[in-house]
Structure formats: structure tokens, C-alpha cells
Length: 544
Image (cartoon, rainbow, N blue to C red; front, side):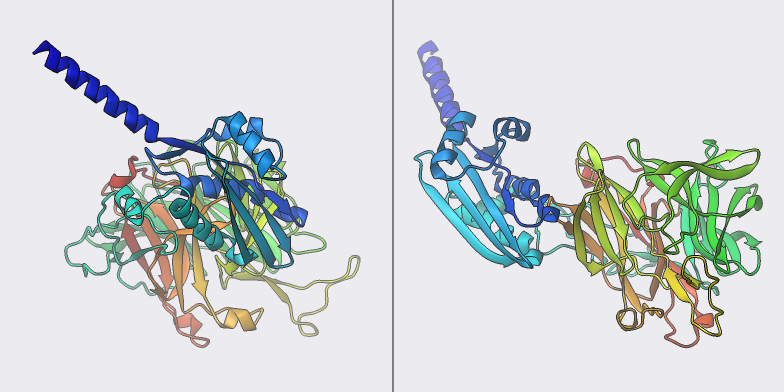
């Protein structure tokens, strides 16, 4: 009996040794980038992407990125130099290469070195816009040709999850699984949609926030129109008006934000606007079912930014610029003697405003995302270096401020002589980490317009989408998006809309009436309940 146990134990140890021996290691080196300085960020971006896509659990594992970074200061010049690096690192396989940028054309050269010293090149001719798909193809080739990874292994590696609700669409190009599976909360809704929709409200919305205004632990829906601020609660499956506040006349209000200024559990409402071209903002409180004006005639455009390093919601302000309407510095706002004044300046790349800027946490730092005048996102490093500019347009809005320009020292022309210019106010970006991993996502709208591409001062958005994007090391990639929304998206939030303990993606939509009849627009709220049970995280009442 004892002899049999020894034989069994020896057999198990032998099997364990064989299994451990099957696990191979690989290292991906920083890529050499030959081209303009603005593309140097691709060196580590390509390294990160290839490392992620070549990882095969229990079979091929990457060396620690910090170890590789300390050991290798420059890409190898040839296969012989690569062999020495592989040996020094103790890796079974080595992946290295370079990217050459010539205008919009790229030459991507990827090499793999196996334990026998065999070098396998993977050259690709592509364009800047196709770098990510090209890396996907190269990764698949290395997995199949060098690592011997069968196609079935990829399928087995994916955990089984419920199918994505039709209201949210996974990025088909990246594959994988999705965590945000909406669940219907209301029995009377169409199960094929996976969303809740409010009744139609006889107003045209300019913005919306969902927050706890009175500190009772439950959220209200605050909606901004041209002349009025409304408070609603979702009760018995419908939006019910709680209070309204008539706003100062002759002010063009363009953005509604919320922030707990006093850290007392009550969110104040911050409304940014302009009278003629001069900034004018308000701070409004909500308590006991009523609004109260806390500050009026603030001569700055006010906004709320989640400021690094703690990414705490912070009240910021901005005045009118000299050379460009919104080119002045952004400042943190301070309150003294009942009034708001400019405090410390916020260090941002040129073009940053209180409306178009989002700080997105990334690894040990952050990235700065700004929507430019052409509705394209410009992504900067924390030091202000431009990383990339999206080809797609995001956060498009038809709200804006008209102003007249004039050379320095001269009075602006009269509107009857020269038509005024208009600066459009983009919709907000929401940084979040719904799936509770190491990577933050950006929730942002993509309003779809033909007129905006033709007429600079007229924007008509008959439909739109909400996208969840993440930085993949090279650019912003799509994680998921909503199905096409009919109507004009005016705002959105991540919050528990009806206080049932489930986080919702809340979207504010104006009905589309075309180029005429804008005064007849109406609004509604659409909510996508998010099931985060498969994300391994806890649900937050309010996600900034």
C-alpha cells in the first residue's frame, strides 16, 4: 500500500513538473519609432498592445514590464543583438521591431526570436489609421505561427457570460466579452430594448444631471431648459416634477453641472451661461423640495473637473480670452465673503476650456482629453504632449455662444455689419471604471449630423450614440456603445436614476424636428440599467 502511494505521488510530481515546464515566457521590447516626434508615444503603445494580445494563460506569460524597461534602454539593431537581450532577460521568446511613419503611411516591422535562435519577421505596410488593426493581425500570426496557439484555445479562454443586451453593442473588432449587461427593471417595457424610457416632457432640454440635491440619500433629476431649472424624481415608472426655478432672463445657459461644494452630502447645481458674450454663471441649492439661489452674476464660465491626482470634483472657472473667445486660463474657484473668485490656475494644453476637458486616470498618472473646435478628441499626456487626435467626432452639440471678434485694440463690429461667430459647447466626458479593472473608460456621446459637416454655424443632430472608449496604448478604442438613438442627445450621466440600487446609464434626448420648428422640441429620459455583477465591483450611487 505504501509503495503504491509513493508511486502515485511520484507520478503527480512528474505531471506537475511537465505542466510547469510547458509554461514559456516572452518579452516585448519598446518599439523604435522613426518619424515625427508627435508619434514617439507609439513606442510603448505598441509594446503594451502586443504584450496583452500575446499573453496565453498557463502557456505563454510576459516578463514583468518594469524588469524589461530597466534592462533594455534601446531596441536591438539586429537579430544578434536581440539574441543577447533575450539571454540576458531569461525569456524564452523575444518580440521587438520598429514603426516608420511617412506622412499617413506606415511601415511596421515586427520580429520574434524563439529559444532556438530562429528569427521570424512579420512586416506590414499600413496607414496611421490602421495601425491597431494591423497589430491585431500580427498578434494572431505570432500566436499561430510562433507560439502554436490553436484557434480553439482563444475560444476556451473566454469566460461564458450572458449575451449583450440589444441596447448595448460590443466592439466587434476587438472581440472578447462585455460586462455591462443591462437588465430590465420594469415589467411593462419591451424586453428587446433593454432600456427604460420616460414620458415625453413638453420642454426642450439643454442639460441634465442626476444627483442627490437635498442630502436624503436619494437622487433627483435636474434638467435645464432655456428659461427654467426643473427638479424631477422617478416615481412609479414616470418622471414627476418636484420643483422649478425661473432663471434670469436674457442669459444664454449652456451647461448644467453638480458638485457637493460644502461636503455636506447635498449637491449644488452650477449653471454656466453668457449674457451677450460676457460669462454669467449661477450656483443653485435644493432643499426641502425647493430651489434657492446661492450665487448669481458670477462673471466666469463655471464648470466641474475631476482634478488629479485624487480626481476630486473641483469647481473651476474661465473668463473670455483676448485672441480667441475661450483661450484664457482655467482656474480653480475659491469662495470668499460670499462671492466666487479665481484661484490657482490649472495647467492645460492650449485650447483647454471648462467645457471640453476631461482628466482620464491612466496607470500611475492621467491623460488629458480635449474636444477641439471640430469635435475631434485630442489626447494629451499628463505633461501636455499630444498623443493622438481621433478621426471620429464626439460630443457634438448645437448649444453655443455668439460673439463678434475684432483686432486687438479695436471695437468689435456691429452684428448688422458682420455676422457674429459662434463657439459651440461640447457635451461632457465622463471618466469611469465600471468593470473595476486597472483601466479607466471614457463615456462620451457621438451625435451624428450631416449639416454640422457642411455648415459651420448650424448643427442638426437627428440621432446619436453613447460610446465607452478606452486608451489601448495607441489610440482610443471602442469598448461598447448604445444602439442608435433617435433624437438629439443633450446630456448623459452614470447614476442610480430611480434609487433601486442599480447603476444606470441615463441619457437625455430632445425630439428631432428638423431645421424648422426648434421651439417645438420636447424631451425624454432613457435609462440603460447596468448589471455590474460580472465586473467584480460594487455599485456606486454617483459616479463622477
